[in-house]
Length: 107
Image 1 (cartoon, one colour):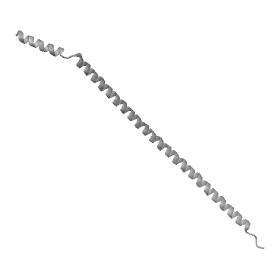
Image 2 (spheres, helix red, strand yellow):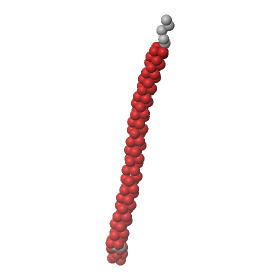
Image 3 (cartoon, helix red, strand yellow):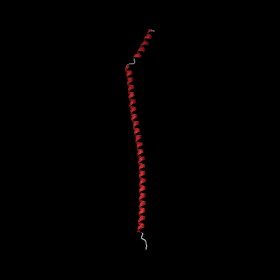
């Protein structure tokens, strides 16, 4: 019985003292490495999402710029058509006025 008790105590002491601090230190180093890896992945993901946001903002700005340019072009076309019709109207008025002057009364 004493023999079995001695073997049991020996085995338990070996199991409890068998874990050295190096294994705990190795586990802590692995935890640190995994945290560093997670942080680097998080930083890369954040930079990627930031670049996507900036690309999206650029597309939005480009679409706003295109809309403003179209509005400006439409306003310029309207002004140009107005000026052309006004000029044609004045030309017709000039032709009518000159034809009336050129007609001489018959006596």
